[in-house]
Structure formats: structure tokens, C-alpha cells
Amino acid sequence: MPKYLFIYHADAPMKPEPGQEQEAMAAWGRWMEKVGPNLVDPGQPVGISKSVGPEGVSDRVVNAAFGYSIVEADSIEAACELAKGNPMIDGGGSVEVAEIMPIEM
Image 1 (cartoon, rainbow, N blue to C red):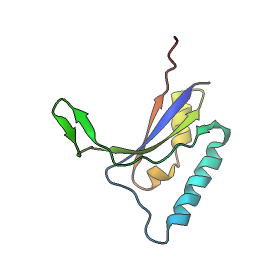
Image 2 (tube, rainbow, N blue to C red):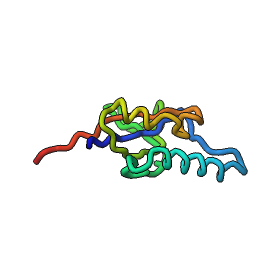
Image 3 (tube, rainbow, N blue to C red):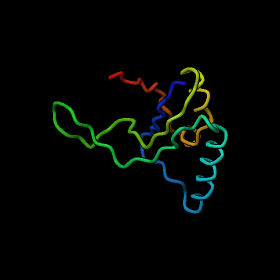
Image 4 (cartoon, one colour):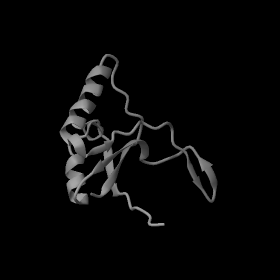
């Protein structure tokens, strides 16, 4: 079954309000339960992004990545359905969905 990379994006770091950390973690837990065995790797949050290009290194990263997960699904449309209800979306961010393309050696 194909695997899909979920990349979590936001314009700014999304931190829960003080005292809301447990609810934020519970929301992630509920989403992971909904995705069930299709969740191959729950992933991790990532640190501050930098952009590297011909001009050098920049701290300005538009729509930076804030974490990832990996899921299995029959199609990209099915993977997008699994992304619906993700806490990142509910918090004002977005989920980029891309198929992981195996390389044959």
C-alpha cells in the first residue's frame, strides 16, 4: 500500500495557550486513533526552519514545516481524507500530503 508524508505547516509556531497543553495532546491522540492502523509513523514536531538558496541562508521561511507523520492509504485522495480533522488544521495551519515514492535500486 502506498505511503504518504503529512507535512504540518503554519505561518508561525502553534503553541497551546497556557493550561491547554493536555487538551492539545488529547486532540492529537483522538486524531491518531481515528487514523488507526493507517498511521505508520506518528512523526515528530520539528524545530525552527531556515531556507537555503542561491542567495545564502535565510531565517524567513514562508509556511514553514512544524512536523510530519507518515500514513498508508490506497490513494492520495484517501490520504487527504485521513488528514481531515488533524489538530494542525483546527489550529489554523495546514497539512501537505505527498506520496512517498520508493526508489528501486
